[in-house]
Image 1 (cartoon, rainbow, N blue to C red):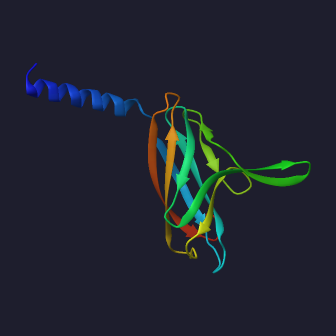
Image 2: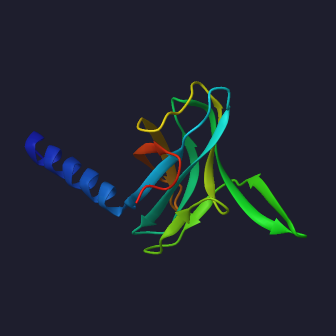
Image 3: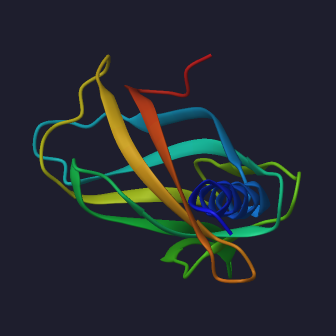
Amino acid sequence: MNHMAGAILALSVTMATSISQAEVVVTGAWVRATVVSQKATGAFMKLVSDNDVTLVSARSDIAGTVEVHEMKMENDVMRMRAVDGLKLPANQPVELKSGGYHLMMMDLKKQLKVGTEAQITLVFKNAKGDSETTYVHAPVALTQPK
């Protein structure tokens, strides 16, 4: 095999690998604005993947920690807890919203003011353990933008 044929074969394998990974589309992303001394807030968005994947982690340069959280009623009390991952079934929208699953941004490094933007990195894994990273630019607002 000559050098050019080997390069073409390597490129074909790379393209096939990237095509087999899921693509996660993020819409409606936003982060709740904070007051001066507030150290935590929520990030919300809708996620749709073309393959079954799991959201396994998130991070942002404005927060020391970003966790996937779930809120649900237990014995007439609303409880919030971190979850190890959030499954995204293929082609089924999963909404991160207030009162449900959301991203909890903690140890904030600064006040999040309305009109600014938060950058969030989301990491997904498929059943084979392959990772995909998605970058989100979310406006900071008091309520969900229309």
